[in-house]
Image 1 (cartoon, rainbow, N blue to C red):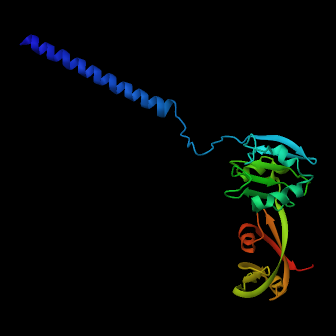
Image 2: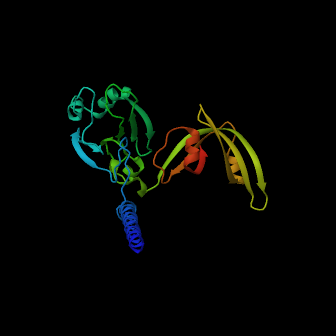
Image 3: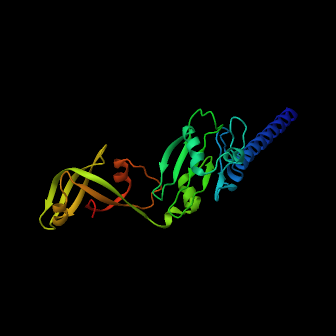
Length: 258
């Protein structure tokens, strides 16, 4: 009986040792995978780029063409980008032909830099690309063909000869005031809270503005005014009146032509 008991105790000891070993082995794998050596899960359908790769591709009419996170631009007829661009004598002619393949999505108030995206199911480009046509007040006319691009970061890092965050851009727009409504009058500060309905001839928006008595008297219903804006730390704008008032700082209003 004692021998049987000893055999049972030995078997139990062996089983416990095996279980402890297995637990330790599994725990080691878990620690190795998730603690000491974390793996980055990558969706194979997405391009994951930790830092943008920008390279000068060619010169074109005294300007440069860059590839941003690309080795080559793929066309459905297997033409290279150099061959394609080589058919044009200037940037205007190039983009006149590209126009039907692109959607204009954004514009900068820096002289006219424009950002395009290749249209869905386009018959020229193989990939869905972003194209930046630089046109700055400083004279930069470079072109960027890009994939997986954050345009804000691209401009911040020097695309089109920026960074755009060095200075605030100021600009003006001419609008007509259709309606003026006094919402509140503060007799102590002699300030007025006005609701202004403003029109660009096609669309309208309504804003509230606190003004003094002199400014209130200058503003007249049905008159045209020049509105001064500051484009501070804002990358892009379009000409939509509501977008402009929502995204930029209104710094002043003066009678049109003054």
